Image (cartoon, rainbow, N blue to C red; front, top):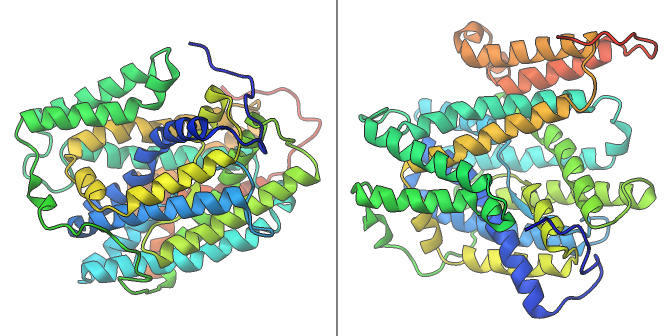
Length: 450
């Protein structure tokens, strides 16, 4: 089956209800795991298992509301595209650092969540502010700087995925043959279905891998269903259920990620516009980008209020538009409704919590590695000359260096230590700074780096 490149329904068309539902379900299959996985990773890593069902319910519900805002548009807010919103992977590293800081200082589970949601709430203002000037920072935010950051994010998260594949941090059976067999089996299934010629199998590869892995875990007697016995029937959103807190030393890395997330969103919305046969230059395009990034920031603020981590546009849904030929934004309203409906029932989150860490790791390892590959693709989209080679080497050398040797920054003051212990922060700042300090020569000879 070949990918359908023809548009069956344009952006402002109104397809039949049955066609909208069919397209919406395919979008849901493409993004569902991506929406809940950051919450699963953060919750399991910080030992917040009791809160995971509620947090997942909020992730789905907020994603539905955010998708509606992004597609519907309210004044200058929103892109007016089928830009599905979901919990962002790029914040995981910075949020885990904040959570561990609170936990290591004796904070309770509520304290950990209050800190993470507090810095996410105030950090959203960075993206809201940047949305109004996004067309003026292109000289600094280039494929070079974004490629470095996205590659660093992917490489950093691979460690999280591999840890889960082996059983999870601190478990007694870490690296056991059973854990490795389960995780690698899921990885193989995900890879095999991603290699399929059928678009729906490719889009469903992670879901199928995790489902098969969970069945295998049940066969190994690694599933415990007792956590689902005392769940309420419905989860209702409660603003700042866990409170709100703030500290500068963990806020700055999150603020930088918001800055970079805005640039990533601009790329996703550009691809979305292209697939929807909308202009990718000119006033209308700039208006869409500004509105989309503004919605991103407001939706992330809304997410923090209702106990969810920052939202962003999901690039994988662009492939669904291309495959189905349905570019009507009416589909986004159905996607939003389905997400809110799923979020109302905590049994969905509880079922996801049952997934053993090796299963989660086997699936997320591929996803995280894909992020790194996407960064490499961006970096190699242009010829890598001597200047770019130097910037890449320095930025990634420092960024990945602090990840591999965290003791290198232990003697710094507390604020500086928290800032420079983030590989993404170091790589991002270094890339932007060097791009400014090392001018690009228009007459530079074709001296490609090896």
